[in-house]
Length: 142
Image: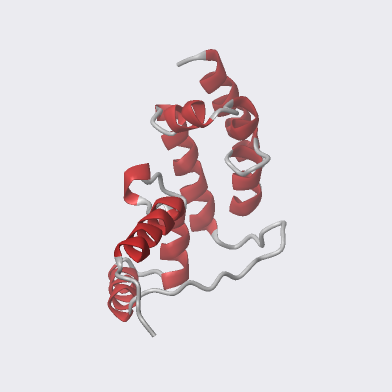
């Protein structure tokens, strides 16, 4: 465990012992202004930290806080709307039912997980591909 990892983990343990609601704990540990982001400022450092035992242990703390569920988050709740195929929505519903949870809780859990960058479509690459495709199309005559 490096000094930086120890620093973040120890801060997370103190916050966990303070019995915060899960959203406040997340904000203060892994959120955009949390201790982990302050310590691991560079993207490569952040990605490496996400592969550590300490990061996994903090995620487990969040899961335990979420299980309590009785506390109201100490911050406003925001709503996002996403477009997804009906088959994906149905698969999420079935998965949530089998886990005896709500689709909302399942989606929050999934959003908080690490995802390999190669699995996330790159918008600039997609735009470049569309532009290249348009350039290959023959010019239409009037």
